[in-house]
Image 1 (tube, rainbow, N blue to C red):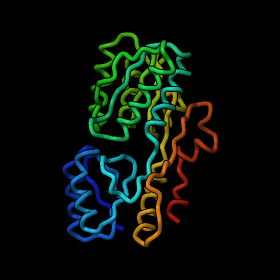
Image 2 (cartoon, rainbow, N blue to C red):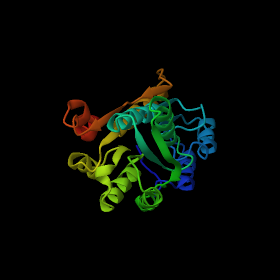
Image 3 (cartoon, rainbow, N blue to C red):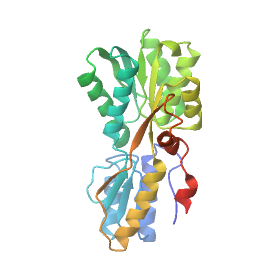
Image 4 (cartoon, rainbow, N blue to C red):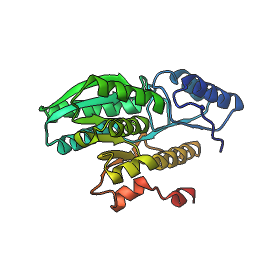
Length: 264
């Protein structure tokens, strides 16, 4: 097994080059988490036309030629985030959304699920802004978070659809002395975010299982290569984690994945 990826998370061109190199090498199969739902269509089509099966994980692509797609139901993740935000705000308040990057299918679906659910289920929650993009770096997300805090003097809740955006809100709200008045609902988990959850700097996280995505993607690709039927779509699930449930078995499984089990 060969692992290779772009040095920067939003470098679509480099990811395309990686796919093209794999095609040239004549690999037996490709597992990919696409950085862009459109830019990767051409190289993935070329892989399939060369007889190389493709398994897509984590983030979708606007192409139906993969043998399987293993990922969180990201829209549902956004729905759960919105319901948690509504619960924490007692159904009323002012919220801002920081988007990730244009073309990222996974985060776009989370953002859509969050916004749609707030608007339909919590009519007394006002979305102040839903068109600010943070980008793939922490620095970019911090800059966007600072701009949003400068723009809106009163914010009751913030939603971040990915790890860098969540960290950015956690830092900027804390530094501005505004965390006590603002609920943070984020997505994904890192060491700093788990600590933030534990210390009250973050209120809730929607946490995925990237280990499950990788394991299912590779396993299903092998099954397909060996002639076995595989499902077209696999939902690897997500869990809403907050201070009250973070020590539960379900939360611990995603916050501290049993790596040894995946490596057996």
